[in-house]
Image (tube, rainbow, N blue to C red; front, side, top):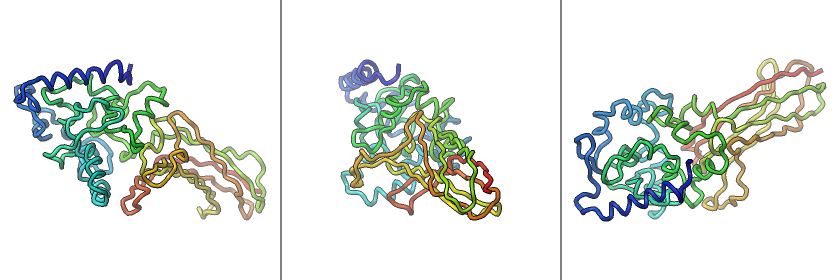
Length: 338
């Protein structure tokens, strides 16, 4: 049902665009909703006068465990949060304008090819990031609830054709769970839209099967172990963002919690923008399992030891000063060395 772009949503958007084009000039970019005038100059707080709960979720992250709680959802902060503004200042003007197309998005409904194109940036109220009228207003009226619940609508900013963002393509190609973007990230209409920055949300993304060490381990003799990590809880790859790095770290500690060994695997997307070959991308796709081998482990003396598996994700591999590390999950198992 979802993603039939050529047959459904794009056709509808095309008809809508033609309809708007034929409208009198004074009718474009303005409309009425529940007796109130709406335009692309409308502030989110104006919408919040009636839609109080949704506004508080969007503006303050109310009810969610976002690391930005109190400051806003990441939709609300998309144009003002530190990572975006710092990196934007280092970009060339043409790239700045491109990034603003989503971080300061204008009319999302003006984008006809939602898989490949992005909105034009707006020029008013840019400090509100992705706000109410970006998604809910098409230039004439408030769009239907069903329209904004189509995953293809999310592709407007969460997919494009340069390889920077391909989340919708991944969902469409790899995910077989039947849930939409909105059913996971906006369950029950939650406008806090939890994701990477919500510990409780990101903790459900991956499942670790800890190693089973059944052979006799002899102190001083090297051994190997294997374990797996499954992308069991997302509809896209992990990591899904070009800037993020997934780190899976295995270590062995003794009874005093002293670390004796570590084995680290990283997963991230490669892009020509960074002088990389996209073919070298290593991620864990939706529903896929990564098997990790850790060779050369050794403990020096007999005793009980613990294998500790820790999974985390970094938000920015380009500029470590802007990085946020998000813990995802862990697993443990013990063994006896003779």
